[in-house]
Length: 269
Image 1 (cartoon, rainbow, N blue to C red):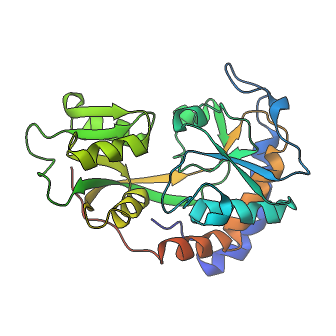
Image 2: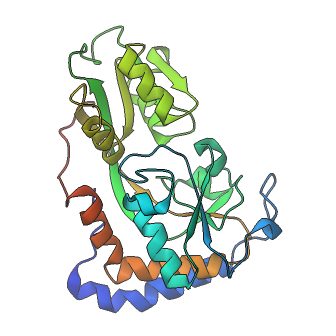
């Protein structure tokens, strides 16, 4: 799960990473079809506005950045780095976030960087690497059995992965991860494929009812979502790159997740 930056390399790459992030952000196209107008960016001297989909256990443990969680803590570190007076959380559905349809300075929403998404939004440097996890009911059937049903959240990489490894006929798609988890708890589906750290956090909050049965190695990288052409992108990208390079992100990850718990066993081919 961890994005590692070896100590001897960190100092040498920090300046290059920051410079690269600024160059990328400054080179972004002015607009793309359907994008939120760049002028909708919030006051650069006001609180940092961060879009995300809630709830997101382990990443956003409440409705505000002060409630803790990995991305909540990262948002506060970004605000401090940028000299912004605090963080305002802007709840936005995930499928709108990955299309850049939000009015905020950036989104931190467990968004995997993909070529398709990069055609409509821009990303800061990667800040976490994850695999897909199989979340199941502890007393439920083996979801690998014929006829088992799988749940996924709309517009996620898990939805793409499960179609490849399971097939489309056994899949139910839900408008949010929270609704997919609810379907699993009530028995409407037998498994949910979702990023490993999210699956672990949901299982930990389930009182023993849910567990992570295994995973699918995908090596996905999370990136902060920046609306194409929005003012302030260069500053946000540079600040995030600096937090990765100086080890702040690794420390926040360890604090949120208790260190690297290691990979989950392979569950699907």
